[in-house]
Amino acid sequence: MHPTDITARAALVGTAMMTAAVAVLATAPSAAAEDFGPDTCRQGYVWREARPTDHVCVTPATRDRARYDNSRAAGRRDPGHGGYGPNACKEGYVWREAFSGDVVCVEPATRSQARQDNQLADSRKVSARLWKTRWFAAPRCDGDTCTAPDGIARIQLNGDHYNYGQVRVYIRRTSDNRLLWSGTATARAQRGYAGGAFGIRTNVNDCSRQGRRPNGYAQAYDVVSGRWSARTPVTIGCAVL
Figure (spheres, rainbow, N blue to C red):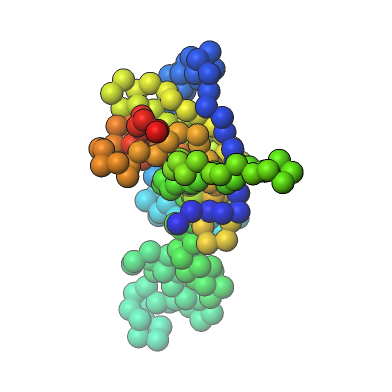
């Protein structure tokens, strides 16, 4: 499974470019100002904060509404109304139910919004997922003359749950952390994938079908938030006959 709407070609970097890229990667911060860990929201969203630990990502207007409703909570209660106990709401209000035990009284539309936000919570976070697939070169034709494809499997890296915009992608050797390849993809909306998604083809041979253990890893960097993906194991460095 991989996004097919977008594929970006990237060439193998030369020695000089590789040295520069290593320097950039070595000095890049592990956490940027907008990186709040696994609960980091995509650009345009903020934590709802219906309670201090409520990290559901919502629009700023929805967070403002949650704060306002919290400040008006006491005045909207009618203890015992309808047999719902001390937290019963006055006529026209219902429990918000943004989280288990949330009995702040709000308008029905606000409760509906909270349920919708909860359902969309995962898609609004910068989870920075990254996974590997394979691609094969197509035949090359010059007029009526075509060369057969080489049949070599190469690594394609795919991701979703990123901010819309640039994502930098790297392949490094595990033993010495040496940078072997780097490229930049553009994450954007793609049907069937949450947040910004991308697929980028590399010129690095995929050696996973040769019975070898992974000896490298791929990692992606979300430029907007400063979030890094988890390391995705890859098998590289095999001879091509």
